Amino acid sequence: MIENESDLVQQARTGDTEAYDQLCKVYQCLLYDYVFKNVTDGNHDDTEDCVQEVFFRGWIGLKNYQGVDIFPWFKGIARKLKLEIIRKKTKRKEVSFEQVFTDKETDKVFEPASVDPSPENEVIMAINKLELKYRAVLTFKYVDRLNPDEFVRKIKHFADTKDKLKKLLQQAREVLKAELEKREFLDKQIGLE
Image (cartoon, rainbow, N blue to C red; front, side):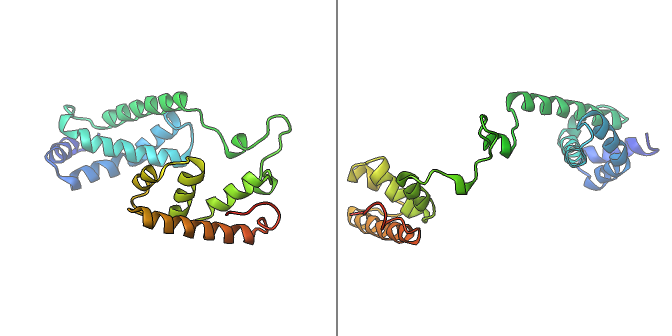
């Protein structure tokens, strides 16, 4: 405990940010060591984040703090934070990119070049390269097969009348056709008419 800690705590409880900042500076190294060893299992980045979160939660809860020595209170906040971290990890299993995109039978990582070159995938990849308004209008027309009234209601941000919808749909077809021509796909497989 520092010499004037109780005074700093009382000042901080009244909203004095400079007093709270002094308390944080005094205990930052001690709290970092505690969190590093007991909360984040030796991960420096997580430790820094956790210490900042402890100080933030301490500031928010300071008006309810009744003690004199503040460091044990900071440690208590850190322990509660550790429990939250454990709960989150048990609820949500973390997986790496390789785990998600690896074929479990062959251990081969899927790469964009190895994507199925079927006509459907070629068209989908081309549509995904288009602007949002064109992707939306093509998806609603050809995938969701909406009637014109539903169609206008769904994309009123881009086209609020049936005439504007027809114009936007025509533009989307032209842009998609150009994208497919860039991929040299149209000559091989399909027409958009």
